[in-house]
Length: 353
Image (cartoon, rainbow, N blue to C red; front, side, top):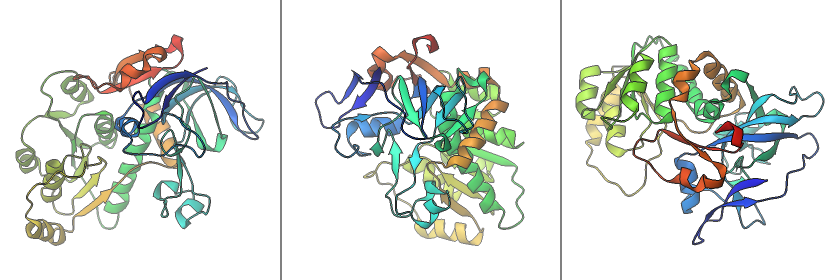
């Protein structure tokens, strides 16, 4: 079978290799890989700035945004051959910490977790892969073209869960949400905002390309102006920050309505500095009972929520998020950034292109 592998530090770290077909171990199921999503985390792993090789290996099978079709599943697993499925990324640490012991492994406290395709475990970027049924989620068969969005949708499902839990500390009746960034996370965050009946606004720097129309057809409003002005005009109750850029992050913290919630989902690069009036920012947050939360990764509950959200969404709209489908033999091309990209994916199965 073909697999997308990475060995950071080499002159050509990314390579499509021929590997032996996997054999499912005890309790595992065998899955035919259909598609693999590519995101910034994969590029960080490729550059050597994130992740870790499996112990004793020189290469890592890349890929955490999976989609596959079950070939074989053990009896009593809840899966049957032909099911559409995605694999969960993170596995709890072996100790385990208190969070992992309770199934909240996305909140691992000691960092000893592994992550498929990222840290210490081979990923889903292969034409066949194995997975424990308890770390897989079945998708609606109608999602065959877009089910690869389940992993980013799980991250967004968790973010909204966190927002609503924090809001629930007192009376919470949000009306307006601003999403900063119209990448896959931002667009899916906007989708879940519309599902909640909110007035949804999306801010992004692109004035052309597919993003404005995708946002507009969702029934949300697209903005390209200065973040400070947009925040001042909207005064949102909720901000989902999906860029990781320093200025949008700090403007979001300072510009919500009283009792506002800001959820940070974008990871900022280090070394970039801006001048911030920290005293004024602290005063606003404290006096208005605002809250700020960071959210990353997802556990099994969030994957199941994501499967429900995607099944209820317009599949044609979801497909517009996927802007490139690259055949597996040219998988390297999917990791190059294109100006109009939202979500590039690798078609692991030729019939899925």
